[in-house]
Amino acid sequence: MNDTSDTRIIDTHGFPTREYRRSLTVGDHSPRHVRRVLRALLRLWGLARLAESAELAVTELLVNVYRHVPDRRCTVTVRRDEGGGTAGVVIGVRDAHPVLPGLRDADPYAEGGRGLALVAAVTDKWGVAPDEDGPQRTGEKTVWCELRA
Image 1: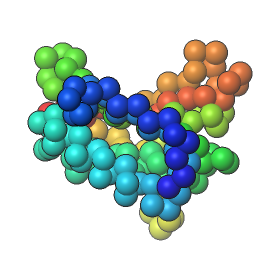
Image 2: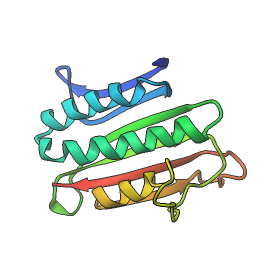
Image 3: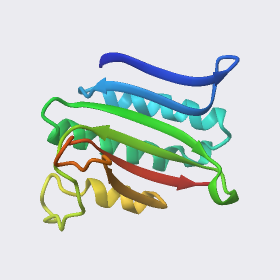
Image 4: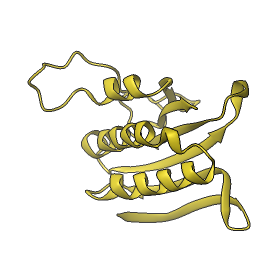
């Protein structure tokens, strides 16, 4: 994994309490590394039961960066969320590619095209948030998903 040295962990006594953020250039082993970090965070936050779905979702989001973002750079954010009185996690993957992703009707025999459908199937919510100036100006967007306990 090629790090851009933009790792921020908000912590108390060495343990992340609310948010983990890492900027990286996605390579072959990046999804595995991010899944390990995500599983550890979910255990620390008492949300281990969300791990399998969260790992699948973040893998699909990173594979999209690998396949569709020319420089393969992104920032992954994992945030503990107590919204609505139910504990959960919000995962975001931000990149600077101007094309907004969307669900596609994939051919049943195609090798790709189902990533966001998988994200939608294993999470409670997902979406794309373009930069405030719009993806046409900055190209930046965040593809995010939310899982609730």
